[in-house]
Image 1 (cartoon, one colour):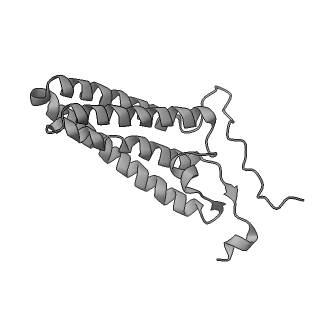
Image 2 (cartoon, one colour):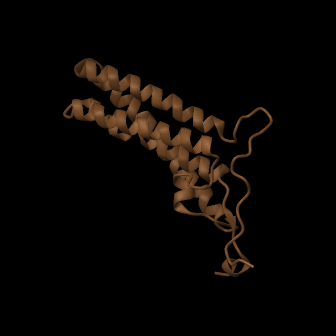
Length: 162
């Protein structure tokens, strides 16, 4: 008999329509990514006129991301009473989310990081540089998805008494 913990439930389960749990968070991440890319391009093209737009969009995405991140962290803390929550599983969906969800959220986060860094690098001393705040949306979306829908191992009886 093996001493390894039992495997969590299958993370690739979908409902009959082929939609994964937490599809709204994935969609929010994509919409935010699109808004950031558009605002960054416009801000880079016209930093004096549209740089403020880039800063506002980035600030709003940052605020939403912080709320999602903290909310996801709080839900993860509550779930940790019964399950073995890992940081990689909670915040980066390592082994806790279906491959398609994990891929989509990570790609959206990567595009946010690239768009923000490129925009801030091209226009470093303008309001466009605030774009570096926006990728918090991607982190927050992954944290919330992991906290609400991620599959983790249950704690064994020995770990509950601590």
